[in-house]
Image 1 (cartoon, rainbow, N blue to C red):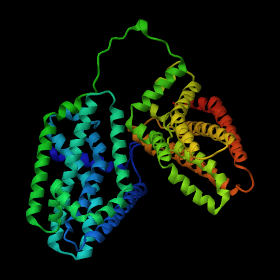
Image 2 (image 1 turned 180 degrees about the horizontal axis):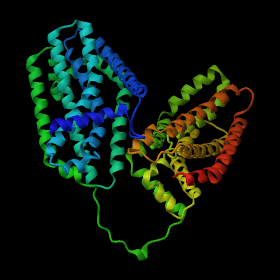
Image 3 (image 1 turned 45 degrees about the horizontal axis):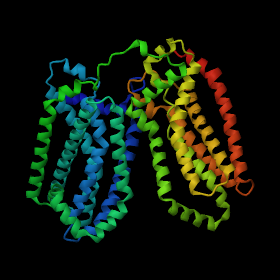
Image 4 (image 1 turned 90 degrees about the vertical axis):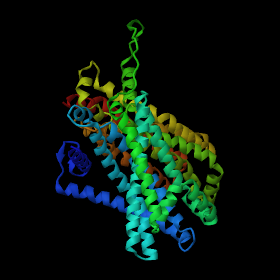
Length: 535
């Protein structure tokens, strides 16, 4: 039975490339080849970037007494990349699979289900770990010469390093399952962990050069710390250098960790897998209930839909968080930014007039990364008929979706814009124009997303990821918004000698206002009727 379950898991994994989730049909050979090609391009690009990191480390450590530190640091990076890349997919694979109830209703041992899914997670962990650690092996063999015994030791170390990554992934997925089982805020917990991991990932690459310089100056101290506090990576590094004893110690320790993890997960796997989120029995007093206005009720519905999906929040609302982070960074790094701008203006004084437009374009780019309205209609899915059956005009439905998108963007974007404007000396009239232009651009993005989604709806999806990440409507709105934000700066640069910045921003205001009027008319008189006719 385990073999059949493993085969099922591997087939599901491969379906990403040969099955179209939109219509549940097999892709044509050209599409399959294109998906595989794009995956290989992305994988090879990451492989080359890690090869560059290996080269930087090798130039410092090769030929020294601490050459083992080269493998230890690369292994640490591989573990970090592997865990970040696979923890959430592993959580869904292990605990949130759609066939949980079906498999448990069959005469199948739960341990077989668990081991089959863990095997798939190990395969994914190996793919990501190899992407980050294999370049260090290749570069080392290229630099010091090829040796079959060292190759065998390196491959063995890679295989069990992948098992370490998988074990850590199992552990974090288990913790995440426990947390989400005991609280209603499942999506917020997932988003929080995702943001923390993304922050740590970018922080690492932001400080990579600093860490390299620190390594160059403090090799002895760092090697002492790693060999003592991170002894497991010291064993792995020595194993890669051909030390059989350390290889056996490393393998034994990893196998022991994996065995303990399996025992913990096996103990309550079925209970966690079948448990729903924590709920409380609450008595509803009908006499205290209030009737909400149509727009208020629809707005609440949009808010609940947005916050119920971690995928929706992360992919279509990530820019909201980043805009707040960017605003704080602008204030903190104010002096550095002013110094850089002064240097640029010193070369050409005409660039000073571009500053308000650049700030406005920056905010527009951040708005473009939040296409909340673009998938909002399709996300109604097969329950769209229920919305149509209610005594609600489609005009009100579209207006609620537009208002929700505007309200979600308005606060963070105004905070970013005002933070940026306080750094530079900008005329009050220009500031007012920038604020109005930003509000109109937020409306433009919200309306554009709705129009694209009405033109290209999809209510037959089985996985919301298809709508949120892969729909054409989201792609057009995302790229179109970024292109328009870029054009604001391009035209300002070309016209900087001909018109003043306040006249330019006034022209932008008029263009956005005209677009706003046209889009509002289309949504209220054309696309609302088109939406009503959709079966």
